Image (cartoon, rainbow, N blue to C red; front, side):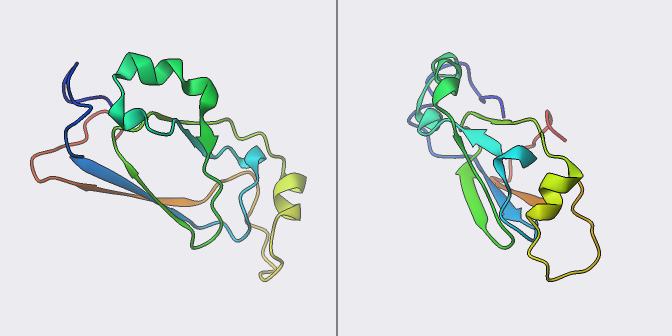
Amino acid sequence: GSPLFEKGTESLPSYALNVFVGLHRAKQLLELGPTEFVVGSHHMEPDSAMSKIGTAVSAVLGKGDILLYDYRICHRGTSNLSSSSVASSAVDGDDEDDDTGVIRKVLYLMYARPWFREHLNF
């Protein structure tokens, strides 16, 4: 998300937390396009955080894995480069129906202070 204020928010407490819950039956391969995060960027000014995007780490989530992060952290989605054969090979094999395709399944939740309204992404 975008910062509430242009400067000086690095030391403020979080006003929103995001939660990702992995819903894919197998570990999500890097080819499925996981979200990348710049670690510690919620304590940086936005321009400084974006300059560190080359040091981003990927969150690879399997079914039931949970990721909780500060809304202010610099993050981005990556391209889904999978093909149905790559995604199919990642399936646990516990279900016969092949619904893997190239879709990355993630449940997304946001917990926010009552006064905060997300207006950019949704």
